[in-house]
Length: 99
Image (cartoon, rainbow, N blue to C red; front, side, top):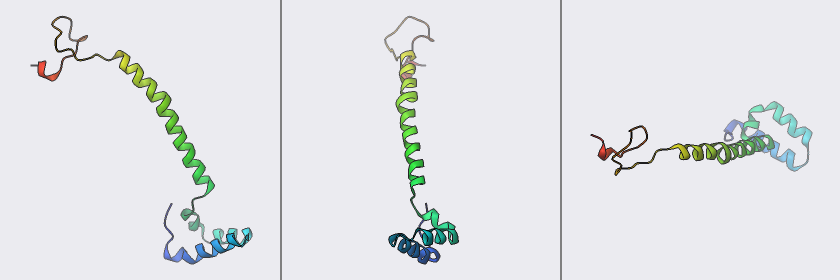
């Protein structure tokens, strides 16, 4: 998306007037003459692409990432500063206990 530049202002105004008057043929001709004008418009195609991307991201985080975090949490080792026995690969210690 981009803002309408000075050299596209009149084309944008003409396009808007053509749409308001219901003249789709003239509006299409304006877009063909000024294809960069399409970059300034939020179209249904852009909306659908953005909506699909947002939904895909939401599904990814609610399913894949949530499952991954749950699985990692089940296998994580907690910090136990009071543990005096056991091997270091099973027990974790905070930085204050490590010399």
